[in-house]
Length: 129
Image 1: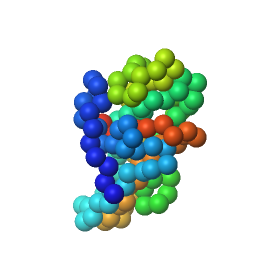
Image 2 (image 1 turned 30 degrees about the vertical axis):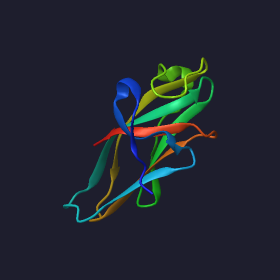
Image 3 (image 1 turned 135 degrees about the vertical axis):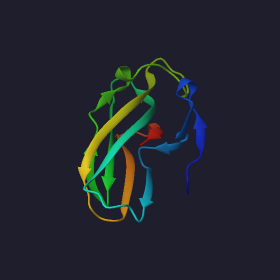
Image 4 (image 1 turned 135 degrees about the horizontal axis):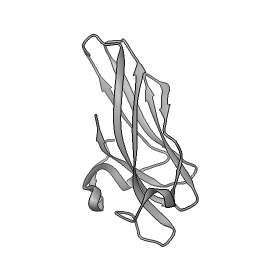
């Protein structure tokens, strides 16, 4: 099913969010009839929600079923403040920006985004270019 959009404090509207996406779910989109190209470039603003202060989180991007990139890990207390989670003194929300380019020449591409974390933290996507 397609996750809904939600509002996340100062981040505004995001795809997913609290109780919509967790570390066991992923977002996937297929692109067809792409023009001739040699690379795919990504600029994604992931939103981590309710990340525990000492628990590290990272995000993965798959292209055509293969892992293309993993963001550096960040602990909850490195993310920032409390924007849209159920507020608590040890849980944080913040944006993790992922920018990278990967080789790709096929006319179709399937892109999959997921949170890489051992817990059931929540996440969303603020923007993807």
